[in-house]
Length: 270
Ligand code: 4G3
Image (cartoon, rainbow, N blue to C red; front, side, top):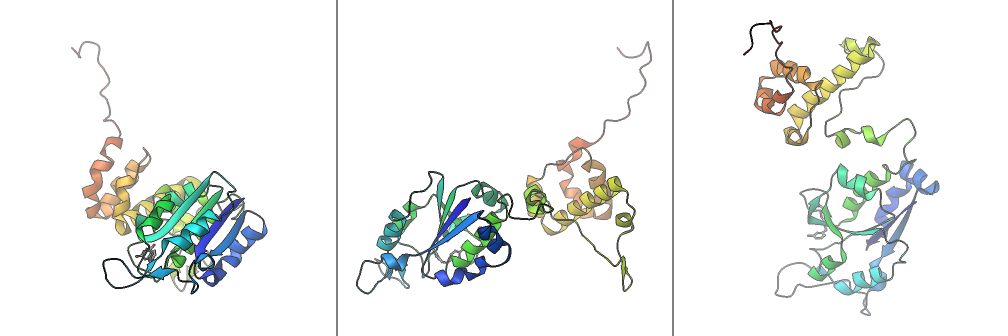
């Protein structure tokens, strides 16, 4: 059981987490999602949670007191708790981070609105994380995306048949093209090899197409790829099909099979 606590001024935004797979995960007791409106911890009689910045400037900032009070009031259920601040100034979230978080007992997501947080709020956070290089009206949508990415990795959340380990982003390659029936849709045919029943050839074709897609669409992923011996011939074939792949050749040249050795004759050789 993993406990997820969300600190937000807009708890109603989290309704979508009670649908579909996330709903099932909660009903099965695999995850508990707990919403805290930190306006309930506002100190002033007007329940202010934001104020103008010292030094001037546009916009409002979240005040420290309500967020500190809300965090201090959380039941200390686990020592394995991680506090995460949603902000465009954070490190960009990725699959590896989702995998790491899915091993924690409790995750607390702090969602801000307005123009940002009073700087002293940052000291509460174990991590400051961003969904990507864009600004949202609040951290809620970013938190929901990250929660979805984490919860589906909890064992038992996805059906037995689907394994999250095989997800393309865990292995650093994009997914290969997939097809279902019909084998011929208005003249667009499913690649022959997939109908062949030849498992080794299908595996090779899929690996090649994953590599092709990654090189063509996400060259930024190539630097982290580790190629295996079996990739050498695929990469050489792809280089013939796309001459622009040749610029990455240094990444797989070391995999080239050794040149055929001349049979050693008894009196040659030093
Ligand atoms: C803190 C997160 C919060 C500072 C939050 C704005 C984008 C993301 C906010 C701040 C957010 C993101 C609220 N926008 N990319 N807006 O994860 O400047």
